[in-house]
Image (cartoon, rainbow, N blue to C red; front, side, top):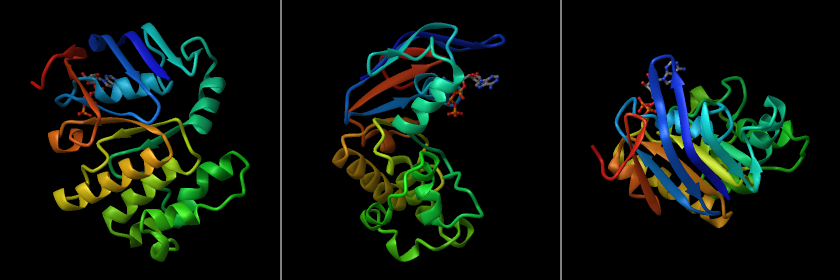
Length: 215
Ligand SMILES: Nc1ncnc2c1ncn2[C@@H]1O[C@H](COP(=O)(O)OP(=O)(O)OP(=O)(O)O)[C@@H](O)[C@H]1O
């Protein structure tokens, strides 16, 4: 469904990606594991069409992303991809519910996210602003926002770094469970083995190159 082949990308002298392959099937959870600076975030950005690689090819649902215009790649991101970042990155002026429903509104959809908030145990706190909510609720809302429009793939970059082990495990359970029920794939970038344990499959990166094992 989503495939990267021979991906290369340099930032000046730094070769962030050097001949990386990654394929993701519908509903599959794939972890991208490596130390700081190994290229995990860059790989997520290239696979999601945020960055265009210097070399190699990204194919999504039979379409080559590299050759598309910025606008066309943005449209695919809005409709077909979801994103979860390290600290949630919610909009501070909007309630948790409004944050979660934002991807729907941006697509002109008027449907409600109430059911998804209930599924992620956020129904009672939906009216809170992000700064009024504890970190784990903010991250749950970020997960809900990433899934609300039924994306094909959710890209998650260190999604539980901001919370402790127990809260992180609850969050990963809720995240992977909700994604699997929707047949949404997850590409999960992390330095942490305990996070990668939630994936069906792990690929390792070291200095922008595929590796056989963790370094
Ligand atoms: N916008 C940028 N400009 C310049 N160099 C960059 C940029 N983004 C990433 N890099 C460099 O590319 C390499 C890979 O960075 P990347 O952020 O993808 O690694 P990472 O594995 O996600 O690291 P971390 O775990 O710290 O998030 C690093 O050498 C980094 O310094």
